[in-house]
Length: 346
Image (cartoon, rainbow, N blue to C red; front, side):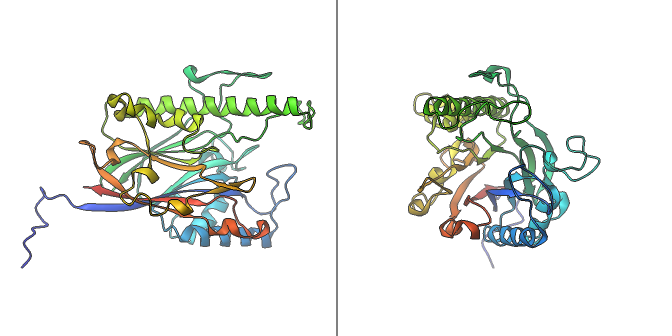
């Protein structure tokens, strides 16, 4: 007979789940124009895209998946149906194909793709961060105050094995130079002028910084003096130690002020129980021939095993990026997938 009485409510048992983030590279319905300069998917290329994304995501077998660059919820449903998810598991309001949607009237995302979260767990509440917080508003050179996110982050609270967790996914402004255009979309600047190009890149950096600071303010509000864990993940368009990424997480501040642990976030790859075993293959994107990690996954103090407030830990982090070595035309996405296994003490 076993010495353990598993019916004793005082005995804590561990329950785990996998959470991943994936940029789906313009996932859209067939035969719709999403960018004026991009070719619509015909039925054959759409089916190839859906099949390829399903196969790629199936390797992660995640319970929660944050996604970026989605134009149509119907296309996302087609991808995750093969993973065992149902339409009601998907939260992606800004790419909705439901005609009753107050955001899209069923037309899917407009002008720019949206972020979303798919979860096997019960959804407790969801919201969008559409407005840049007042304390994060800055003037963009030649444009003025930056008050609204280009791609609003999504916040979703879930009940994971009895533990409420807040998930935030974001797709920050890219490093791509932001050139001025008129209302018709015509260029107003010389893209080949190196001096103008620098100013255009400065605009992008300012936008990304404002977005990062605004997300940070929202995170502080949610974490301050609470013990409910939070996970931030998505395409941050810069590396872990960059100024903009650290604006969101403030991990380094903990070295100087231990009280910051309550509101700081920690790179899951660096706090995982098996840290180091995957460091040689840790990249999610190849930029100008150089591999880098710009798809990030951060956790709050409640997933630090050494914390007195620990409710679980990051057991391992994996990178799925073999497809980035294929010819570009054979890739269904130009980003790798990062996945964390979270073990809860519940």
